[in-house]
Image 1 (tube, protein in one colour):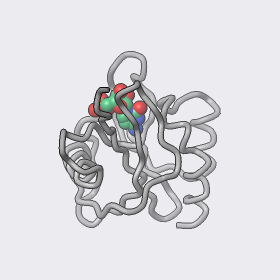
Image 2: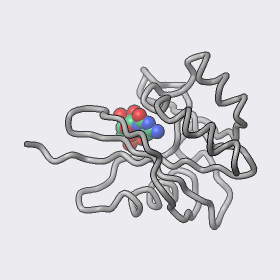
Image 3: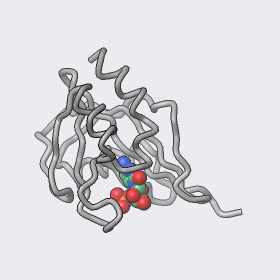
Image 4: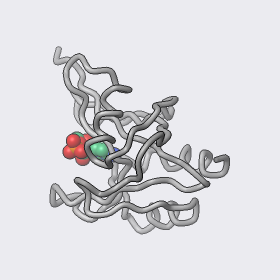
Length: 135
Ligand code: C5P
């Protein structure tokens, strides 16, 4: 059996807004919005991987919190999980993405309805809407 690799994504909510990042590649998801993150290295914990990815992609230092309940099988050997993250230092910049955007609950619903989210990330919309109503 092949070991399962983890792709981690950060759910960063502050002031009732969620940080979304717009992908530029590959072509199938070019222009779509996602929770920023990436693949954990072998032997790297999901928490460390997320801190590293958000440092590389957004230029911020984060504290990592709890996981969202839903996880998504991207392939048989690749699972996508989202962890709540809180910016401790820096202001997010689109280092590797086309753009960044803070969205409120209505904007998240609209992006979802118009098909502008990366497909795998749509699994998190219900949980993200709950978080957006709280923080
Ligand atoms: O960002 P990166 O290309 O390293 O992501 C690895 C895989 O995880 C890709 O297939 C990407 O589409 C997927 N992914 C995703 N949702 C995210 C982050 C990554 O579906 N929020």
